[in-house]
Length: 83
Image (cartoon, rainbow, N blue to C red; front, side, top):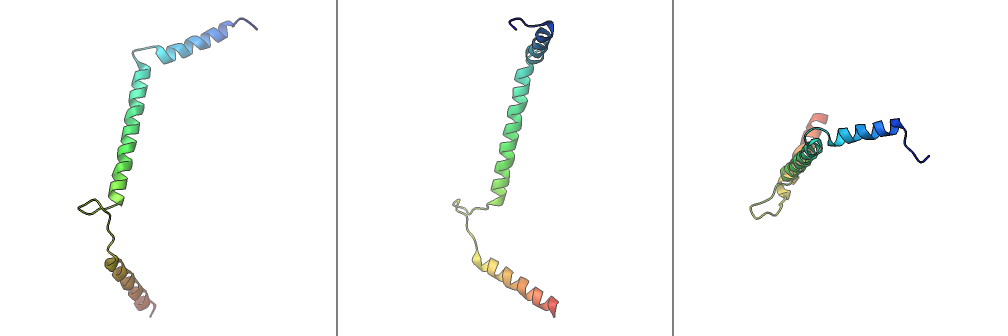
């Protein structure tokens, strides 16, 4: 119970080589991970800026007149197609 067998040492050695072997595998992996996070954040910010149009002063404005006219036009189309 107190000693480790050869299989334990082989597994520990394989994990050690996998993590620290070669030239900076962990730093390469972490660099790739960081680039992925940056790309994800950029994509999310691009989606948010496209989804929320703002005015010149940075305040989001909604033109109710246009939306009311669009609803009326759709209801007129529905009525004319039903007849």
